[in-house]
Length: 403
Ligand code: EZ4
Ligand code: CO
Image (cartoon, rainbow, N blue to C red):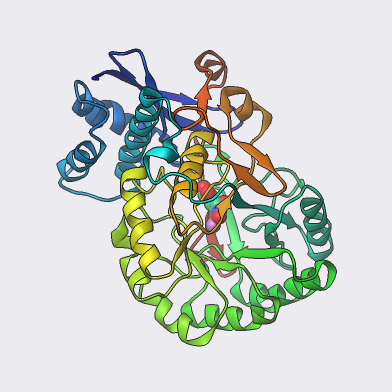
């Protein structure tokens, strides 16, 4: 089998998505998600100009060699744009392999390690009362695990909270990023009360998660982790700027709250210290941004040796194709932890045909050959790309901060 053609589809059904479609001489095609929120066209151009020419005429079954060719062939290595592009190609090749052999991808990468996958979704409100209401609605939808975020008094806009109570979308269309404000003091003083209320209202049976979006120092995380210990979080996510893996050593000495990180990582070299020193409990790298299934299986295997489980990033700003890849990955590996699932707006569902089932807070992987996600290319044309930026964040005195 030979790759004869590949193209990049940029569309915006509800939000911007970049997809690669790789075609073979046997008429089978594979799909890969190449969406990098806020930098979409960089990946699209990178694929068209540099990576696609390298895979034409290759046998799509040779995923290990093709991955190494693209990874080492860059010379400069790593980086979000580069790794997302490589990840999209790798994902599409696994889709082709599954379709060519007539099996779902999970059967090619380890088979069935479990029959259902625990998923968590987000519940958020402007204040504690509204958040409690949203958690209640989410439990009524059958979710067993919920990421809880709340507005903080005195901070007008905050990560994770949609002002109109609708779906949260951080990327804003325009010529420059939107600006948000942040106060760690206000946040740290407020947050424990939120989880105290949630536990009081809903008891111990529901898994609770929280995302600090890289805004704390190590010692602030230690304080937060300690103050949340009575509420038994499933995980506390992305507390510190994740470039510095040493940050976690101090945190780990002070709190038993489980830690998750990795949604902005793109290679094993971003987290090998965290894994081998057992400084985290969950690794949140996802298939698209982590360079595809080929490296992610290796990362999962390394993590498994050290008792670290997976919790793949699965926001609505990655396409359903990435989520499909995450579900095959999560089905096949032994150390699956949980899968993030924000859901999609109707326009996204109109363009992407996601064949996996969801029921009572769990995913059930599709038996469809390949990744189990198709795309309607004609419908995609209706939704034109428009540039959107993720926000930047400033402290109250104007200092540029982490978003
Ligand atoms: O802010 O994917 O855990 N989920 C997250 C996400 C990220 C977005 C950025 O594009 O932190 O909501
Ligand atoms: Co996050």
